[in-house]
Amino acid sequence: MSRPASGESRRFPARPLPGVSIACCRQGRVLLAQRGNPPFEGWWTFPGGLVEVGESLKDTARRELLEETGLIAEIGELVETFDIITRDDSETVEHHYILSLFLARADQGAAVAGDDAAAVVWVAPEEFDSVKLTPGTAERAMKALALAQE
Image (cartoon, rainbow, N blue to C red; front, side, top):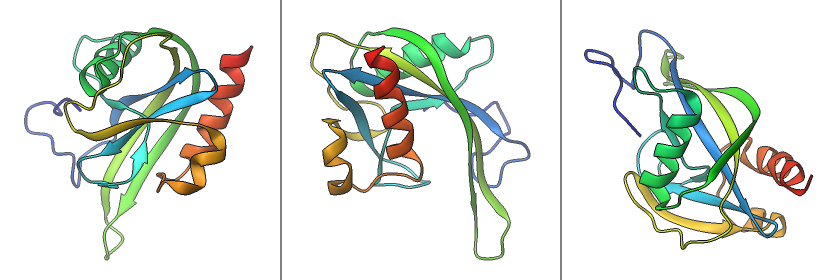
C-alpha cells in the first residue's frame, strides 16, 4: 500500500483514507493476498492499497495489483465501495479506509507476492473456509466471480 499524505497516519487517522481493492478473477478463482501489515495482518483479502494524489481509482488498482502480485490485468467495473473501520479497546477509531473494489481479469501470468503482500494464492469459492479471510471478503469474492462470468 502507498503511504498516506505527509503528516497523516494510517493508525488513528484524522479522516478516512481512500483506497482500492482488486478482485482479480481467473477460471472461477479469485486472487487473494495475505496481509503483511495491520489491520488484519496474516489474514487473506484482495490485493489493494491507498490512492495517491493525482491518481485515478482505476490507475491505483492497476498499480497496486502489479506491486502486490506482479500481474498486469484489465481493470473492469466497480463491484462495490465499502468501509473498513477498526477500533481499539477504548472504542477509538484505529483504522478507517473507504475502499472501492474493482473487478479485474488476468488471463495469463504467474502471481508472485510483492510489496506488503506476504503471499498470494488463487482460491475457488469451495476453498474460502480453509483460509482466514478478512470480514466480507468471501461475499465480495462471490459477487465478483458472478460478475466475471457475465
